[in-house]
Length: 401
Image (cartoon, rainbow, N blue to C red):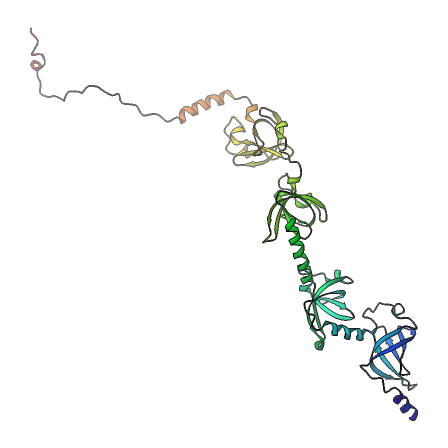
């Protein structure tokens, strides 16, 4: 007992909470034995008190002969040997220093490393201190797959620091939004309506494609993707593809940019006058039927209209009664209007007018012509008033017999 009391007295100068300097004596079995300077006693530094990475190799973190600054956690007395050692920690000392550095630094931006995905967000590490980023503060859009951030280093803004509660909250979204805002301002300062710019397809939707212009996403509406009608956005562009687009409109206040992909490529109407002319007879395919006629594709991307009155010499009540979608037809070009992108066509112009139809047509015109009311002739004389009760003498009284 006397020897044990003497041993305890010899190490009384070391107490839990002390910050000490120690030399690494051995590294073995997932822990390091250290000699605490100026005390004559030893300490044990486990992997758990060295790093938060459970998969780390302790031999790569500490070396024999290396001097470390450590935090004394508690005293450990051996059951069989009555030896006294101390459990020490490098990780907790770094955490204490980190807390001291963090106090009063709210709204500052620091670099952290995501260590693991936890319920409701991400666990991150900053200079040995564990912090938390809620899922709503990871990105500008709510992130469900937080696993993809694990192992990454990125900047985050300090939102809350409370050492007493061991509370350390950060936001990556604030940093992303600030960077995006600066990038938007720079991009909007360079964009000009009517110019061609290069960007990458960021995402595709049912109504078009969003193009990343370097901090600003511009929209290429479905109608501006291609010269063809009713195309699928996925059939025109792919995510990540670099494309050249034309700036149609800029709304910096709303953060919107309207773009056109088809405006940067030759259209089917370019030089159409050299391909089509009034009087040409060509083959086409019926693409659409409407109440007023049929649209026939005469060139790739160019549909001409066969008006209902130009389908047949016979009366057509509905184009569906005479034509079907996909039908091949021969048409005559009546007019080409490149400015308005219109081509007028006729089917009946290539057919001989039936004689009966011609007669019926004249009859219909005669029947449909309204009858004019008979004009009363203007008389330049007046009829005598009606006389009654006259005799032959009254009529022939002046004639001598």
